[in-house]
Image 1: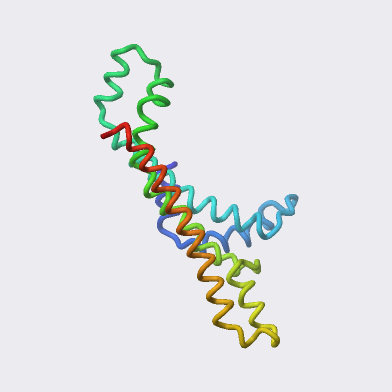
Image 2: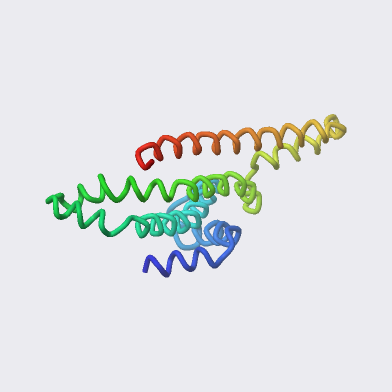
Length: 171
């Protein structure tokens, strides 16, 4: 069931999932009056959680089998083995793709315009639509570019610091 979910989500575009959730949620669950932004977030969550699950699977498979066998021979419980041995090693492997996933989410967030929501980019376009500001194209788009660039760079910087911190024990 999980593999089917992951494969389906990886085979369809994000815009399809967001649009599908936006249209079908009110039809299938009329008793829940969810706002458009909540439905957009549900679509993003459903789509990107499949990628996170795939990254975690690959990280768990990257942990050498000898690690868990050694922990079992020491008498550790399965919970202790997973929390203390497997997950920290898997997280080191999975961190770079997860950061890429976060950056993808951040960069594809403007897709919510398809369901009528105003995102940061659309707000800039709305400012330019005002005749008073129509001559400020370069200023508005430069501001949007710098904001996206700074936030993306901050995410990358924090991720590299975290990777550096986590890799200390493996040298």
